[in-house]
Image (tube, rainbow, N blue to C red; front, top):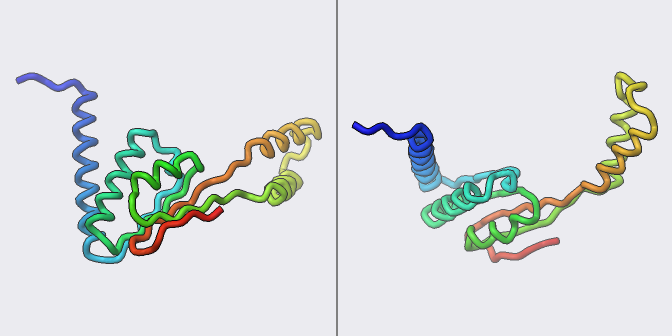
Length: 151
């Protein structure tokens, strides 16, 4: 009997686990109103994200009482809307820069080791944070509700 390479065994086990998970989700969602929440979808690798969104689309087709709530960076909005065909509501949200700066300055004031950071390092950190603050996209899929985009 030929032995399968370890990677192929793991791949098959993962596929089986995925199929079992999908069957369980479909069973649960078909019998009751269900909310599925997925946070930080953008952190899921592209191929896995596509499979997940396609599986969610299957669930929506078989379970009209299911609602899906997804968060992630704005670049996944188009893919999410395309794969979750139907009634998609998307909202772009972003933090107020001034709120983040106020929060960080308060945290730095409460630092237990205040001498560990000089003013120059603090300003460099605050500058990098200001530059890298970004929006996120919140998407809800709610069958029976007309699609629209806010923001």
